[in-house]
Length: 418
Image (tube, rainbow, N blue to C red; front, side, top):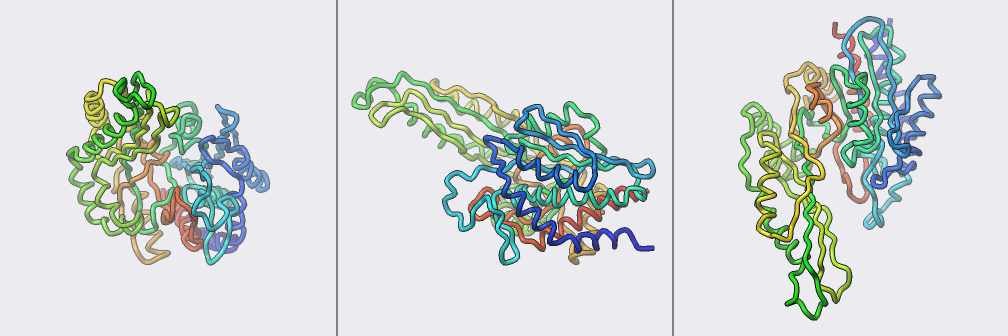
């Protein structure tokens, strides 16, 4: 009798070209968010499920943003594992700096290039990854215990109101006992927590005037410039990182820098401030009466999000012309770094690569925070985040296949452990 773990690895090796081709084709199905229309990309996934004869549901609170949910039961009772990934990607803009067409999925020199192949059109990894994991384990379903559910969601890049958040709030059956994601981590790290995104919008309003009469009105854009400078003070807020997490982050510092570029480890326990969007003014010879600043703040574990909001509002209060709106607020959440799934993934990576990935906290947020918010453990293991949201985004094919193998083996082990 063939060992099922060996079967899984054999199927993945046999399907290598199929998975790479799927990832390339999936990249060609544009799904930038905004605007967030993922229908073409979702159709790539449903076609493959149809070809393999697997049932699924399309859940679309916004018709342009379909979510795909598929599930099957094993041959005996057991835990419920959810595989999650998203099918929307960052916009490209004018494609400045791209060597390869961002929507072509070019395969060359052991890589696949294109927008989203790393975050997370390796949803082409989660769905030539989680999707193929789901398909392979379906073949072994009689040997498994419990339930395996696949959620391919839209709207992750705008925090999921029509995607994972909608599913979690309205479909209890997608919550499960544990969630596993293939967001990019770097194969040397395993993420058990993440910093929380806090999005604030600052609006500056003044009377405005003719540009030749700046004495008549304060400039909304100049006020905004001063505000932007002052918001840097948020990065100095003291953070009380829990001792056990601080210890893991110190141990994994080199791996964090390797996966997320040098300097990442130095900010994982700090507040960061990104001035994402600034717009204001109507005409070059008018004193601007209006300016908007959209700010992306990342709140580390050990700090309350409300404390950061309060500090930001105190800074804005220095300027009576400024109002503040909280566009989105999340709390930094984490799962037990000693959970059995951490041990399972580490053991499988060691068997495949000879080393154990370090448990760390992520700089970017993912949809798995929504599972953690309901006290459901959630973990992330994926490829190295090469050029995420940058020109010439790519994924290394060998890493891609390694992550598929790791997830397939780990899902199998979790669903057969009892």
